Image: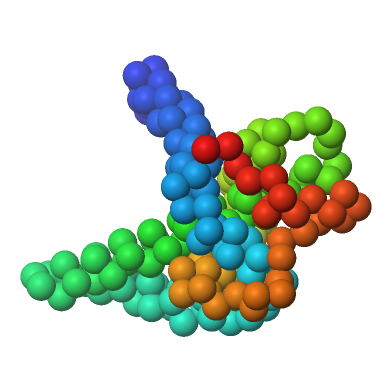
Length: 181
């Protein structure tokens, strides 16, 4: 049976986790605005291509995870470093997804700053992935693969020049109203 201290520890862990994920996504948007903007553009304009590019990375991350659990020594270290790199790229993709969702949410809300919309986008993304069963087994794998591919496109700068991140009906372009610095 679990003691009260175990329950409190779990609850505090969840509270810390639920606040640090949106904070890290906002921080990445503030530190890497060009990369997260290109990632958000890719998520909006070509989600299937982003998913297709992210699929090999996701499969490689799964193989690296198995390698970490099944081997020892230098191979385990290399697999860990590879998995850490994939997770970092995925986090940049998550920041792009938060930016994209924040802009989408700005079309249905009024009089909110870009930072507030970004925080709302990060929380929406986090809660969608944490929804029991559907979020865990459908939304999270699909979005994780898509944001991994979109982040790869964003990091490498593979975004056509004529593509801009826009939403309807306000045509709220991210280049017109940058995040506060």
